[in-house]
Image (cartoon, rainbow, N blue to C red; front, side):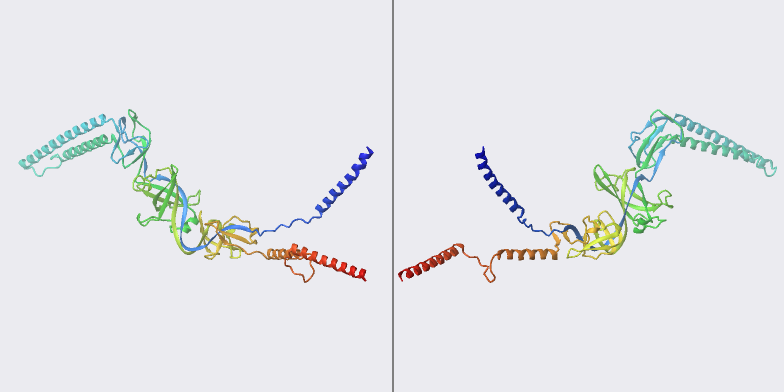
Length: 460
């Protein structure tokens, strides 16, 4: 055991020495220097342009028919006929009989009225004849001029009035008979139906609701800011359709956006007390025919639509993407060095895609579009084109600290190559094998000289 310890302890000491030496060398080793790259914030930007701009107002409204009525009978009775078109959603034509009430009683009234006329005519003829006989008698007797009563003139007037009354009763009976047929007063469609065959109806009771398809209206609310963008007086009534302001209506139907062209024909006489807005009335003519969309889709009542009203035109307005206009009307303009200048713009109007400015930005200047905190405006930016982000519009130069760091790295490399050389020595690379041969030759010559000197001394 003692012999084993005597062998192991020296070996362990030697191994420990080597391990300790390796640790010390590793701790004292200089870390590898990593080059620091120059990174800067990259943003998307686009150029501001100058153009003539026509403003527009975007609003919404619900389509409704200009003419919509309850269909009611003027006479009572049992319904004996219903048109196949008189159903909800049915298409009706002007003058078409939609419902007919039983007319037997009204035909009897017509016959009775005609009989009364015949009787009144007979009475009138008799009174006229008696009056003529009375006149002739007075002339034959020579008693002077006969009185109106003697000539039966009052009786004739009464007979004439009775005849006129009988004729009026006939006209009324015929009119009532005609009214047993309920006809459509216009071309349109049926919204609701509330009566059917065999039902007894009374005058004034609603049979259903119909509306005209000649014109559809849309009431569009306009705020004071909206009115400032369009040429529309408060008390506005268009003289004709051609001179009325244009409006484009749109809605998504079946997953596709449909467009209809309309005209603003008038405005409400008063402001709405709830919304404090003025309503403009837009009309679409023949919405089920020529006024339908390009795809032939009509504008049905009850549809909620978006409306764009064309407004005033402004010249030489600065136009830039909407993302370039930031809160408080600020715009970040970047120059060819990547430096940002914060501008406060005079804004004319904005929409979902563009911002229109009176001043604050010049045409041709680069406007930052990327989301960016205001605290970073002092940074140097790399600018990419909004149309093609792979295209660099502004590549900023390296800062001074980066240039100094590179110069310091170059100086460090030069000092490292010259490490251990005397002053005045060349930095050219020396061929190691040639140097070794030269050293060996010099050594042999030195040895030969020493040996000859020893020989000469021994000979002497």
